[in-house]
Length: 147
Image (cartoon, rainbow, N blue to C red; front, side, top):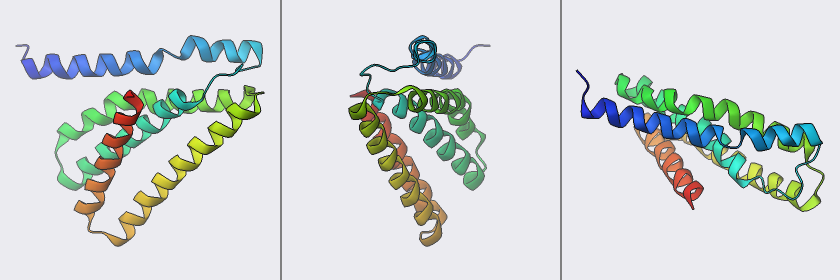
């Protein structure tokens, strides 16, 4: 039958998908108008990085532990990773506001630094520690995205 855990997992996945889809109408308007106005890229970078980060962590944890429960992280964030990539690409192509473009570059520089940190950790730390670090990064970025 239907378990409480299944209801919680389904609810989490559904809420993730709603958050990941919510910017789609706005992003489509950017393409139609050829301009983002004075929009800030932060929420779109958050969806982009959060999606990819949680997919990375879920896959890494699954490969390391062989526990299939971690794959729910991949399943519930893959759409966000793909849509977030589309949002960022569309923002970049249509941004005409220097300050907004500067902010986008700052956010993407921070993302690159976090990716480099985790890639470096893979090379110098035991796998379990590198996994722990990637979980911390994912959790911290989700916390920041909620602010």
